[in-house]
Length: 186
Image (cartoon, rainbow, N blue to C red; front, side, top):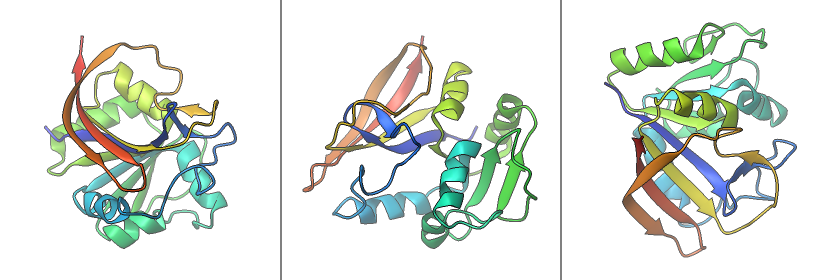
């Protein structure tokens, strides 16, 4: 079964974006010694999953409808993107598939049939749903040395209790921490 990894930037107080879905360099450190490691990590994924709201943030930043995120495409031109939204009216293509059907069944099937690592790159509510159904295997957090007080939570509105087993931890010179956890479901 393919490993599903939630690999995401986060503030020290647990947010993946501010209340307005902003996750740019006003909040997160995009430059620094952690950057090359992140690009190398993207090369290790074969599939990227994201929620519709996360994809919409890219559209606001200049991504054209149906295009993959530029950074992901730059780091890994073969990365297949799946965007989960029942509301988006966009055509799927070879690089980006818009999924409207049952998210959980789709991801279960993907995990059973994929031969590569799956990257959940964003979407607190998508992460919430996948966590609730115990489909996320690994959590990698790019913890930025900033607190914003409110915003989009790592797992949206989830109240599910899990245990985390620390697998690895890396500290960068700019203060970014990169803990890697195995998720243990109760």
